[in-house]
Length: 344
Image (tube, rainbow, N blue to C red; front, side, top):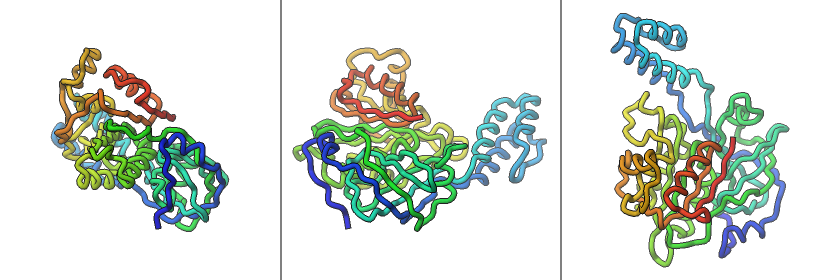
């Protein structure tokens, strides 16, 4: 059964009413979200090497990547050597890298979409954004492995259904602004999308994607290196099929190395600029940003974004958030309509 959510005129006002709780929780579901793509990597490397240097023997399974790369460089095949280095990194990375964990608490934990909790597992605590909507009666987090991290590798490798954890919270004030007729743009990299997953589900479940009977366009620009590094990709694609006013724009910087990906490969902030309505940009925003706007979208989206009629939310690594907010401000979007949170 869905939990009851108290209605508030403002999500920020709702935070003041929430008690800070410590609850025991039980793991009810664990899903590994990325894939083992080593066979794809091997095929791609063999294809490129065969085209550049047919005299080379095909590789099978783990290989001396450094030796192969050095040989390619020595034989004048630097572009292929760079591709090999990129794909070798993908081949050798730990597995899994991305996991979602669903938690059931003995009593409901009230929170506002966008907030986070402190999670304690096996004696170690870390903060994780809640990816579940407040309308649900379970909590969900999304965890990406941090090499050498104290907790994320154990969550990715070891946590299992039935395990007991402790949650503390909720915390944070990256929450939805008051309802308005403006459209909404979410921009995230990797697991920075977790609080936006909560917000997006909440918007559509409660009808807040409409204002006075008019639909608001809801955009999500989500960046990652590879397609299977996109958290909740299947759910977002399904929502985009079901809702005409939800626009999902994945931005995948390395995916063309492995597949026929023909969508956005640019940084999230640059992909945003490509989807801006040029007629609504009154003044030049700088040569580089102007060029991005003129390039047009690399996605299949036919809709565009009016910078005069939008609220923007950004979450991800600090460097991305800083550059993204700077780009958004150059479009003339006032600071009061930009909410951001960085980490790392």
